[in-house]
Length: 103
Picture 1 (cartoon, helix red, strand yellow):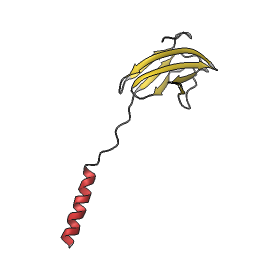
Picture 2 (tube, one colour):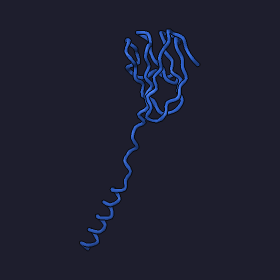
Picture 3 (cartoon, one colour):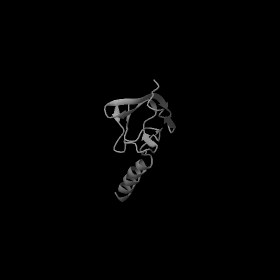
Picture 4 (cartoon, one colour):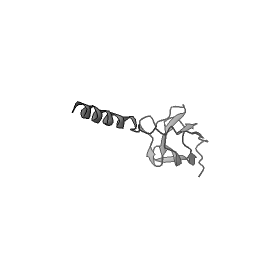
């Protein structure tokens, strides 16, 4: 009986050796530079988190890989819009050009 319990526990613990860990987070980023102070960044129509207001410094936006639309808003007005593609693990830099937008 002791041997049976020992073997059962050994088999059950061996199952955990093959358990797959969570997949690593997609480290893709969009880095926005040149946005006017006080403007807010949106990615795919959604405000980009708590630190979305610009203060003259580059804004790092964590995104999933794929195609995205980045917009810069001042109040209710869109002052810049750009569509971009970010690969897995890639860092894409978007330079806001004086309130003009590219589509």
